[in-house]
Image 1 (cartoon, rainbow, N blue to C red):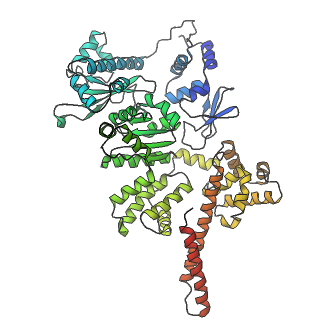
Image 2 (tube, one colour; image 1 turned 90 degrees about the vertical axis):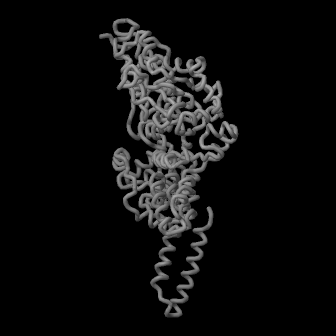
Image 3 (cartoon, rainbow, N blue to C red; image 1 turned 45 degrees about the vertical axis):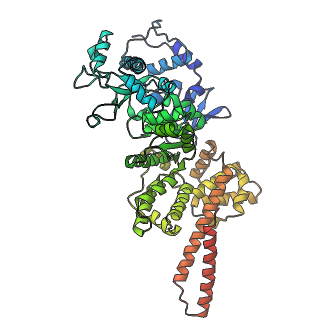
Length: 595
């Protein structure tokens, strides 16, 4: 059996621009001779995925995935070795030759490619039927009245499926397609094989990331609406997996890379309206709830997720689930609130694209959105309502990935519902049954890499100082060892202080003074991956404020306990109580002071 020749493999590997090809999936940044990005194979915020062009290899220091460009394409596209070679050959323009010297590939199952070819042909037929047939005229009039331009119709290849359900099968049979093959395509009813799955509908071709049609969505336009769903979507097929596909991603991917953000919509028309208004980083889930795989498809480039779902109960529920999922993947999330219309297409038609653009620009943070909806869901002017709203919001806080984010949102909850910060923190700490367990991968990775080390806001602040020792003066002027609760943070702060006193404050000296191997590895890990190479001063400042606030709250609780246990029966006790109350008032002022 002929196989791909080694000569062809070597030629493809030599010609393939690894940074360019990997960069189609992951945002890469060059540091020296290595390109870095967040790993596409596991969730992370700190880049641990590296591409070394000279070695033609990729490697993730987090999950230890690695290999050449062929393996990378196999992993990302979920295809086999020969298919990966063929894909790279197309990208590099190199002709594949086989061991027998022939440029003709060995015989293999090409059903998937044949179905994709057919879908592209059918999409062209439906598109022609919308624009050039009398039967499709009403469908064209409908979509034009919705404000969709001819240019947009052409771009998205919107079409119309004939009302005659037998027409498509008859036509394709005349083009020598077999019954056996057509039965595999998903274009026909499984119960009535001669009947087309889509008929008398406005058709939206679904393209894969390469711009090939792999599925369809069909909108109901006329007849008895009670007997037919508004939208009919292709099912799972050999070339189409809903949970891994995003509508319009082929059009949006470049804008997503440039803007570093993406809009997730519910429907085809919503997505198309955004694109027509010049907001080209919009995509839509394909008739299903947003999935983790769909988010992964864009998370290599998009750092901010904007959600544009309906405002009804189902839409709010979808928004809630999407927020939790994206936050667990350490992505910033905002919510677009549409004003003046029920969907983007209606706003574009009635109020103009400027209104829709403004709505996008005014998107609010997910925490603000959730607190607003909880205030409508529960009677937050009552203790019971506040408690229920807080418990719901705790689920959101659990999904956040840093202690600083959690601390900030606990304060936000306190202010929103007029609850004391102490009560909010106690309930959050004492709640049961709603804490998200770490995934098996996260749990195994944390325990195996740095056992018994809690990487909270305190430790992150000290690690940021270790990465840039010039920031230690900022920390030592405001904190002492006694201010730290985290044992590892206190240990590193002590080492930094000792090195500073000796006039030898540098990374090598800190590592030399550190006798704990796990802490050494933690420092090396954070430095190697550039975890604090950006916004170092902000990270240190945030950590200092967190530690100082935590210290004030501990002192306040101690004072309250003293006041509780000190009866005012003697003059000495009365003097003490006066001092304690004065100190408590001073602490209250500091805690309520805006940073």
